[in-house]
Length: 219
Image (cartoon, rainbow, N blue to C red; front, side, top):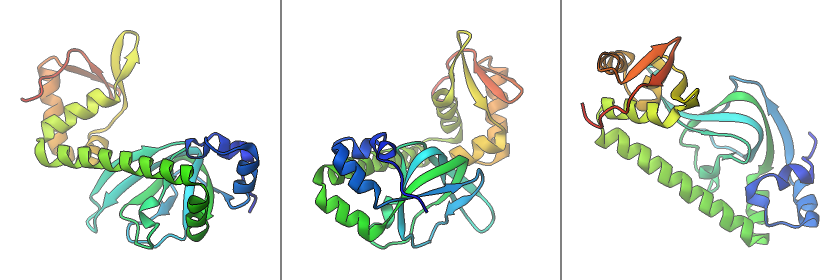
């Protein structure tokens, strides 16, 4: 498998502090791998031998159980990585699926550890990124445990809506998709959405949600 170019790593925030010579040297430690949309690149419980940095495309982290229930977690694009939680040899704690055709730079865990010891600034950058991920996970866990389904649905809609023709509009979302993201059944999500429509807070056209006015924090 080919090694990435130094320019590939230069675009990754983790390696921003390295010189051109250091980037060229570091690139030789990696190999480039490609995966198609829909591929499962890591399964919860696996022991991974490679640390992977996303060069192109997107991945989704998720949990699932034997009954097929699924909770979607964060999404990572270029500059993101998986799976830092296996650096100590522990199994990965979540599964990872490809959302868009993926190209990653992969490095064996042992080589990564040596790299982090050789370039302390890279090690510090990875530490700060892992801390940021932990904070996002704690915030998400808090939302699951402290907020009801209504609050989680409203927070998701507001977080994913973007400006379009002076209106806040979400991506295309089914009730099942929303349920996977907020940890609720499709039926529970449907009830919340119907209440929001009846209250004049949202409009739904072809699975896109338009925020007509900001919903209350509590119903």
